[in-house]
Image (cartoon, rainbow, N blue to C red; front, top):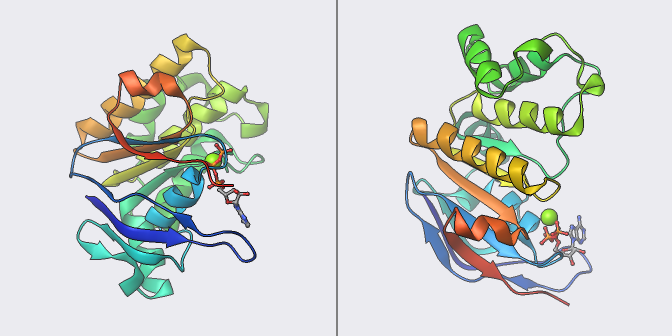
Amino acid sequence: MIRVKDTSYQYAGGTRMVFPDFHIPKGKHGVLLGESGSGKTTLLHLIGGLLRGHEGRIEVNGVDLASLTEHGLDQYRGRHFGFIFQKNHLIASLTVEQNLLAAPFFAELPQQEEQVDALLAELGLEGKRHARVQELSHGQAQRVAIARALINKSALILADEPTSALDDRNCDKVIRLLMEATTSHGATLVVATHDQRLKSVLPVAVQLEAHT
Ligand SMILES: Nc1ncnc2c1ncn2[C@@H]1O[C@H](COP(=O)(O)OP(=O)(O)OP(=O)(O)O)[C@@H](O)[C@H]1O
Ligand SMILES: [Mg+2]
């Protein structure tokens, strides 16, 4: 599903980050593990096509991301990838339901009300369907972000630190939920984190070294 080879990236004015080669087979899950500043978010955004201009090769589902045009990449991303960002990127003034339905809307996919029902139930958010995101607790908002990443049934779910702010019980709950939801439709889950607790539940795909 994901193959990273000879890949490096340099922010303007920064030092070049070199990423170890690794691959994650289709339907399997993997953690990008490393300390703060080691480049996890950068690598996740490169894999997700949110950041361009890397050296080397990043293949997702057999497609070399560098070969896609900007527009092609936008389309590919919307259809095939679900993101859970380090900061949740929900629209605070919209309701939970409206935030969920924004995902198929932007991907130009049909809106599926049944999907919304199922996800809200699965994530224990039935009572919050019409609540505005700004009225939710942090943990509730995070579950909405997870639901939004899952709603398009993307083949690849990319999650950035979904558990690092959570206590052990909720960490366990969130990661199991993510694994169940992705496994149930054969998707691949990639989690970027410094949370060592995840090592016992998900295979480590790559360990990033600190960059100075
Ligand atoms: N937009 C940017 N412009 C310039 N440098 C950046 C930018 N984003 C990140 N960096 C630098 O790139 C390096 C890797 O950052 P990145 O956010 O990928 O790390 P991370 O492993 O996700 O860290 P954390 O665990 O704190 O989220 C850091 O040195 C950071 O300062
Ligand atoms: Mg990060």
